[in-house]
Every structure is written in C-alpha cells, then in structure tokens.
Image (tube, rainbow, N blue to C red; front, top):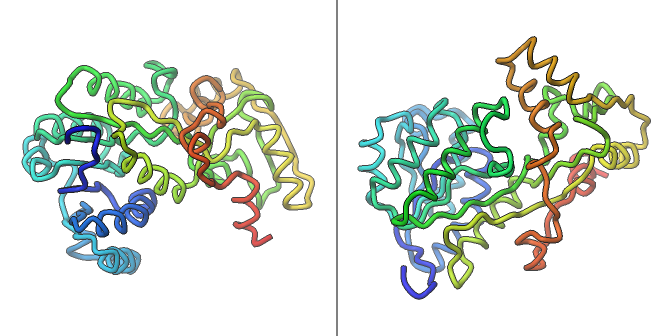
Length: 309
C-alpha cells in the first residue's frame, strides 16, 4: 500500500452481527465496484446449522457478493494468524463474543500474520482517557490493544471511535431510558455527557474512513451521531413521546456502591463507567463526519423513527 492509496484487495470482515452487517452493507458495494472480493468470517455454526435469522443474514450477504467462511475466533493464536495471513486488510466487528482476552489474541494474530491494515474492535469510548482501572475489565483490554498496536510499525491500524450505540440508551436492562416504565436516569449527573452513534452510521462512516485518500493510518478517528447530556436526553424523550417521565440522577457514589454489591453485573459496571463522563464523550463539531459534512442520525431522529413519529 504505497503513496497513500487505499488497497481494496483481500479484505476480511470479522463478524456479521449488528455492527458487522452494517459495515458489510456499506463496504461491499465499494469493494465490488473495484472488482475485488470481500470475505466475512462468522461462527462455524452460523454456516453449519444456521438459525432462521442466520439464514436471512447469509442470504443478504450472498446478494451483496460477500463470501462467507465459518471459523472459531476462540481458536489458538497461530490458527488465527494462519487464516489472517491470506488477507491484506482485516476489519474486526466481533465484540467480545469469544470472552475475555479475545481482542488481544486477535490483535496479536493480526500482527503475526503480516496483515497490512487493521481496524480493531474499538468502536466504543475513548480508552486512552479511560485508561486502566475503570472497573470495566473490557475497557482495560481495549486500552491494552491500543498499547499493543502502538508498540509496532509493521501493521497500519485505524481506530474508529464511535461512543455507545444509540439504541443502548433505550435498553431496559441498562436503565437510562425505560420507555415502558416511564423512567429516565441520569448517570453521574444531568450535566454528564455521552457520545452515541447508530450501527448504520458506524458502518457508513467506517467505510468512508477506510476509503479516504490519502490513506488514514495509525490514527484514532472520532465520529459521533450525537453528543448529549443526560438532562438534554430527558428533554428530548419527553418532547418526542409527549409524556412526563419519572426522572432521577444516579450519582457516581450511588453507582459505585451498586457496583460494590454486584461487581460481576455487566450493566452495573457499564452504568458506573458511563457516569464518569471523561472519555465517554467528545465534541461532535470536531468529528470526521462533521468535518466531511456527512449526515448522521441524532438521538431525537433515532427516537422518532423508533416510535414511528
């Protein structure tokens, strides 16, 4: 990959879940237009004994011209490296489905395989600011992935930093906005902010970042569908729904106390982490999509579409 040009040959996308499918929908037409193949890696059972939902996804991928291979990402590092060595670019959309240590193992395998360009699973918060010791083992591992990539020069890497998925704000188990119960909880305070982006926008923006010339390399690229305080979020929800919600700010002390009682509860961990504020948001005006004038879905538009309003 010379002279800042983007090389679309031999490209592999890891995962075809919510984010993987969003990336593949945006990326596949570009790669196909360049006359190059695009491969998606999925869990072996997705191919061998697909569910009805798997069948739908596989059918869509075939229509997009994407080749699908089944491979277990919990495999040993050497086996992963052998597979990855067939590809020049790897985009990792897997999440933590294979458990703790997955992302470090995949990253080491990418480096061992001699992959030229790597987009790691970093579609989240600013792990450089969060650092280690946030109380979130997942965040610790993500920080270590960044350190590992920065410690070498052979693999170009691009981190696409997206914040939380917009839909997660409305996830009942997360308990920030519960539309059914009519409750809204501000994490930390009503002034605390969070950056969110829809998976569809992540797919489109990741493709734009990948295709940008001169080629983006060894850089954290910030994107945002919206950056919003929990107080403003409450205003938006009440305005769009036309309802009055029961509102309560959950202080950092309260959330840390909850975490002390249930340290293994994933949602309790997430609430305590997002209440910190620092590293969980960035100014939308300074993002890749704002600089390029790319249209994204803000929280209000997302909620209106979700509720059919």
